[in-house]
Length: 282
View 1 (cartoon, rainbow, N blue to C red):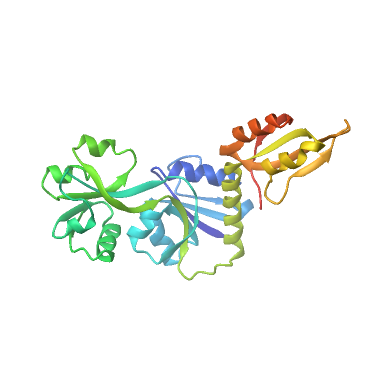
View 2 (view 1 turned 45 degrees about the vertical axis):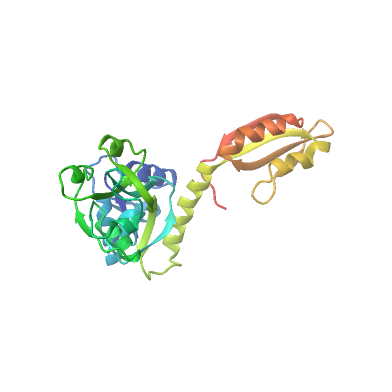
């Protein structure tokens, strides 16, 4: 039975559970549940603190887990990323009072406060910058005002909270993070159970990215239409009862669907429909 770690709370928890549900796996009904078994799929889920998941996986007690790239790197665990999941995206940046620093080279001799000591210390060392790192569990924006540090390093989304604290980001991003699947470094990459799990999640990712598009067009416009909707290998084309017309079906990127529909209509295609894809295997 495949043993999988899942975030029990925070920004990773809800989207992870939703993706697993879309992939056909049972999920817990109450937040107090710490473990559930899905016998049909031969999977056992363990609901753990996101920060601890990479450590559990690296120990070999659990086969794989879902966590954040930032949490994996910060943990220093002997685990590796095997699949990005496309949600919980964030950017990790340095910030300070205006005029304090323009780039990482200006941090020499300064103190940096962060909740991600492993990431920051590693980034400073890789950049050859000798600076002190202070670990805080949260609300790092106040560290500068209280004199604990001259600089902070934290996840930045809109930057509103930093501006409200009188701070501004500077330099290049330290890293970009998102939810990922991790496994122990050196684990069997061809494990059939793990590969099946990954295929299911990849199917969900594709289903979220594409829609199925169907339309009718005249035969003389088919080549132009197919150029607009090439599909993955090629579109499906079927003759219609009315002579000179064909029905076309192809997968198209969801974010481009409206533009493609406009272009198809402009060349004479009609009965243009899009439908959501709930699951797939490519």
